[in-house]
Image (tube, rainbow, N blue to C red; front, side, top):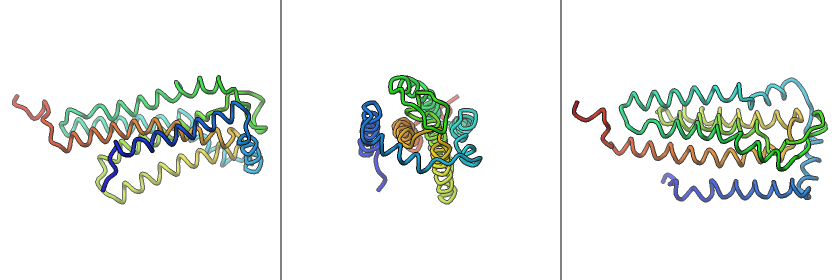
Length: 221
């Protein structure tokens, strides 16, 4: 039985918010998790070309065009089907992406966390904006494209590709030393909350489309 949005909402939003609050508290107060985080980073950091390329998957010029293409296709496909509810899902995906810098920038300034020894001395590394960008861009693109795709195999490949891109970005950021591991986990949490809004909107739009709600295009001319 498919999980309804109402039943899934507490877990999809509550758990990431609680985890993000815990990590943020530890970062701000320099708690014991920060010491574990720094030890883990020292064990994982090994800058190389591959890790740098993977980290670049979270760059805006790389990730956002993927989302823009998915937004355009979802809007075109919805209009081509003649429905009136083609626009909320693409709008939700675009809004989620806009909210990434709006949320990340003030959090970076407030937490003022220094970077790893692998980067020049600076602050403002928490949470990872590159991670959140990758989660929202690739995740929202996947949610928007799952509807038009009818083949279960293709849908599974798309979800797997999304996971590979997000995990690859996360690995590259930590391995290259651009971010502490907790910065990346916090980016996952923020991205998960934003993607939940996209998922709810996409689910609602699909239910309306499948219910056969009359549209302006199907009425008399």
